[in-house]
Length: 83
Image 1 (cartoon, helix red, strand yellow):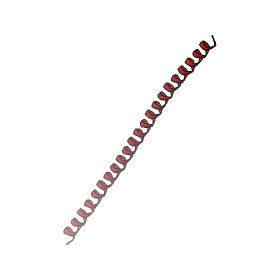
Image 2 (image 1 turned 180 degrees about the horizontal axis):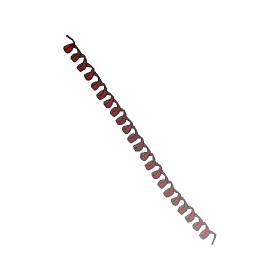
Image 3 (image 1 turned 30 degrees about the horizontal axis):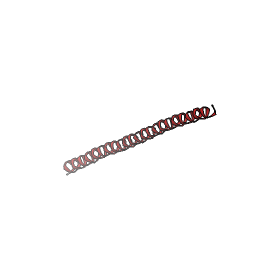
Image 4 (image 1 turned 90 degrees about the horizontal axis):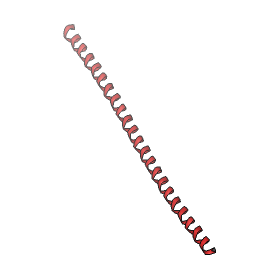
């Protein structure tokens, strides 16, 4: 009877151990997925930030070009009509 009780408790211990391993595996998978999602989110944020900066530089370049062309045009017009 004592051996039977011992076997049952060993089986229970083995079952609990297997359950703990399974839970640990799920926990690790969940942590890995969470880390991958955070990394992907950071990558998207960096890409968007770079895109916003590039767009701002493009707008600035266009405005600066328009100002330079306008000043050059009026200067040339002044030179032609002034003489």
